[in-house]
Structures are given as C-alpha cells and as structure tokens.
Length: 440
Picture: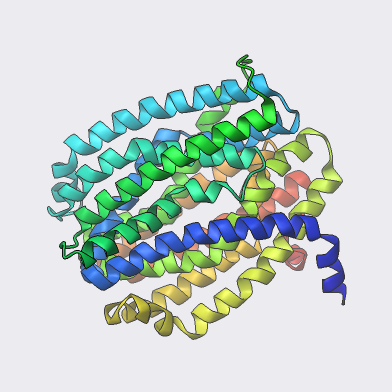
C-alpha cells in the first residue's frame, strides 16, 4: 500500500516520465530495429562493419559537440527556469555555430582519411566506403543531438527522442527493408545511406519543432545576452564526454582493431541490447537533469535530494524486470537477430548486470554536472577511462569479445560507485540508501 500511495503522490512526475518513456522507447526501438534488420540481412559480419563505422561517427560527434550537450542542459535549463529569452538565444547561436565548424572539419578528416582508418587502424578495407557515408552524416548528426538537448532544457523531454539518432535509425531500418523488398542488395554502405536519409528527416522536423517551442516559451524577440561561464565550462564537459565515450565504446573500437568483423558483430549486438537496461536511466535523465540545475541554482537543497532519491528508486524498480529477462532468457532474445547471434549470450548477461548497476546508482553523473561538481566528474571519468583503456589493450588482443566485455563491465561499475561516493561527499545525498555502509 505504501508503494501505491507513493506512486499516487508522484503522479505528475511519473506522467512526464511515462510520456518520455514512450517517445524515447520509440527511439530506442529504432536502434534495435536497425540492428535486427541488418542482422537478418547481413549476418554478424555485416552488423560488425556497420556498427564499427557508426561508433566512429558517434566518437567524432562527441568531439564536434565539445561538451555542449551537458553544458546546455545546465545553462539553457537555468535560462528556461528563469524565462531568460536573450540568454537562451545567445546560447543557441554559440552552440550551433561551434558545432557546425567542428563537425565540418571532422567530416572532412574522416572522408579523406577513410582509407588509412579502414586499413591501418581496423585492418578492414571494406570499411572505407561506410566511413565515406558517415562523413556525410556527421554534421546533421551533431545538429540533431543539440536540437534534442535544447528541447530537454526547455522541459520538453518527451519530444526530444523523436528527433534523435534512434528515430533516424528506425527510419533507416524501414528504408533498408523497403529497398530489400524492391530487390536491391543490402550492404553496410546502403545501410549508411539509409541512416543519412533518416538523419536528414529528423534534422528538418526537429528544427521546426524547436523553433515553434522557443516562440511559445520566450516569444519572438531577437535580443541576445551572453551567458557568463558557458565557454569556460566546455573543456570540463568535453573531457567528461570524451572519456565517457571511451568507457562505453573504447573497448568496442579496440575489439574492431584486433578481432574479426563477425566477433565485433556479436559483441555489438550484446552491448546494444544490454543498453536497454540503461534505457530507464536515459528516460529519467531527460526529465530531471535540467531540474537538478535549477533546484541547485535556487538553493532548494531539500527538493534536490528528494528528486534524486525518488528517481533512483523508481529507476531501479522499472529496470529490474528487464535485467531478469536478460539474465534468464538471453538466447531467446538474441535468436531474433539470427542463429549466429546466440553465441553472444554470456556477453549480454554480463553487460546487462553492469548497466543495472549504472541504473541502480541513479543520476549521479548528472547530479555532479548540474550542481557545480563537473571537475569531480571529470576526474572520475578520466580515471575510469584509463582503466577501460588499459583493460581493453591488455585483454582484447587475447580474449576478443570477452576482453571487451570485462573492460566495459569493470569501468562502468567503478565509474558509478565513485560518482555515488562523490555525490554523498559533496551534496550529502545518498541516492541508494541501502549502500550507505559502503560510504560510511
């Protein structure tokens, strides 16, 4: 009865989370749908080549945004809470201007360096054609990511996922299937062009929705006011974004350098499937991260702690059934990708448990980033990034996908426990009350 009473009291909060869950679920299903389609049409090797190129795209996207995604959640979230239109518009102009320049430079580097990357780094010459397509996708990918971030900062987290890369992947899977039904051959390159079309659609639709939302919130005035501290905060956020990418995808890229495309495909499907457990955390972060920044800025420490603890409890509750399904029925789930992928079952179980630890420790990373603790978070992600890199270099050449799995699991667990400890030390917030004995 106490649980139902608590849920009734949090009805408005859970309503916003539910809407975000539905929209982000549609987006998350898009990434899974594309892997499912490619797994059926191309097999493990084809999936491995595509996902390797896609992971490079994601890494360059992190460079192009230079930490702006996290910084904008904080600064634009504060501007929205204070209804400061001039500050918000200045942030938008600065962010898109910097991202445009960075993404175009990096796209040129990827395009002209595609042959060297595919042969010297990954020893897979067939990757060159997929890299060429991803170079075209990169500028639009960077922009849709920032557009979605601004929608989250404007307290529209349920809208943002419709214009992210997950939805673009869903459109890409539909295009790949449609072309296959018309008799066209499927390949990692054609999948890349399908992703480009999907990304272009999300870019155009997201830009329209963002402009209309801004007018509804701030009006149509054009005045600008610079926000102090935005540019100076970017290096810290950029380092955290890059090292977080290294923790999540570094072992995967190193596996691509040392293992066959088939083994890369098995690991990639297991990794992205396990990310479904972490999906709950992404949903809640979209809703509560801007609120963290505003509550901390306003000095409402009690409300900040209540929001952090409450959201962690709900996340753990919602993620538990997903974890149990992956632990007890991994082969059943992976069989939908094709019989080739059943061998990824042990990787899926280990990675799902690590992602559950990520969820059960709550939004500790965003708590630090949104409350002035970005330097602490930077130290944490640098430390775990080094651990992940060292383990990947030591294990991937000899143990392949198992080495990548161990490196990812260890890094994720260490990162979240360290972040939870710092949240308790800096803010006095114990997001997981049952773990208090670890930090006493």
